[in-house]
Length: 105
Image 1: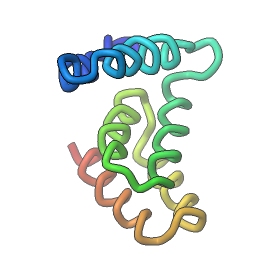
Image 2 (image 1 turned 180 degrees about the vertical axis):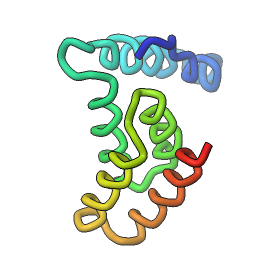
Image 3 (image 1 turned 90 degrees about the vertical axis):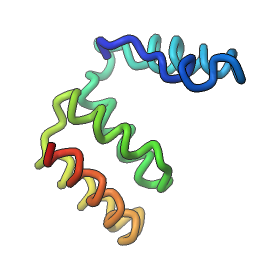
Image 4 (image 1 turned 45 degrees about the vertical axis):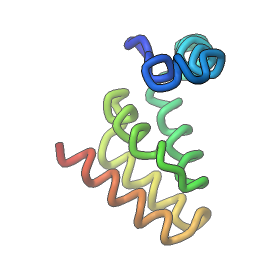
């Protein structure tokens, strides 16, 4: 991921500085930057899949990141459709609502 992540520090830097540092420097710095192991495209697919199974609000942000990392609308639709049978129909509907908003822009 080329862009330096600052969401941790921006949102929690004063309240939870260690967590903010781990978020920005370790997760989005060291882990996401290992392009020789997994591309940002593939990491995005994996992350969206994981977040969809959990039904958490971070899914929307990661669908946006996935689009930035080159995940196409068709790939996102295929991912959500495939996971709908494993995660549940309501989660798929929610994920499709978010993906539709992201990919229409």
